[in-house]
Image (cartoon, rainbow, N blue to C red; front, side, top):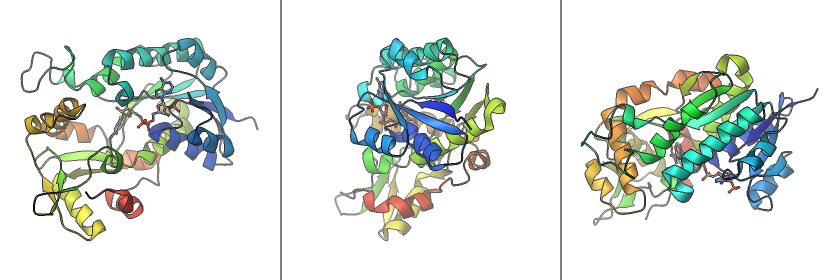
Length: 313
Ligand code: NAP
């Protein structure tokens, strides 16, 4: 049987890597993987090739290279990495290149990894949070949501992702000791719940969408492993780490003032999460996420696998 080819953008990263590994692990499955990277000699690319992926070099800044990567593919997983450059204009241009290339190459099923355009609920004129880069409230969200319109709904599933729990390992969101040595987990959301997910599960859910096929095309859906408040996350951390972790709540304005690159963007994001918690969680239903990916991890299960990687200083 000839397998249907899925071109995976970001295959060497968290989202695309999860999808590539999910497809490659399913030896009897109907799909094969073309992994896109700018670094075919890198360790992550070599590991994918060793597991059976075809490797292709392409750069999202170069639409012709993306068209070549999509040539002959049935499906395409499309993700952009805002944090590599932190330029809204660049992310929007890269998303347009993905959308244009998928149309030009005649890809049947595109999954666009997106997030809400927060300006639909908090217009730029709304002063509850600062406007950033002149026309955004949460730049790394708004760029993706604004880019939805570039993609062809007759071939696209719009997949809204969630906060990766891996941010506690790699993105500075780990519990940190206060002056007395007690660990505090900072989440500036009061008692509101935040959808979170194991990064690997995003790719597994995407694989479920490719398997679902035509019925998924044109759909907007969101995924999460669990919806938890800061206090609930701190409690799960305490249990897993066998050391007390308390939830440290700070106002979003204080988070914005932390000064690290992107603190203003993330402060606005947490404020949006908190103020629209009901809508944001409802857009990421847990049962539907589990239907796409029966292996979906809860936070406690994620901690069971990865707690030793969380820095505690
Ligand atoms: P990641 O693990 O940081 O890896 C980035 C991937 O993108 C790599 O595979 C990289 O490929 C590829 N890439 C970046 N720029 C490229 C370019 N110009 N051309 C070709 N490939 C390029 O990324 P990720 O976490 O999977 O996805 C990042 C996105 O996730 C961000 O936009 C972020 O907003 C979004 N997101 C993050 C979270 C979170 O909680 N952290 C939650 C939801 C959504 P090579 O380096 O191999 O070329």
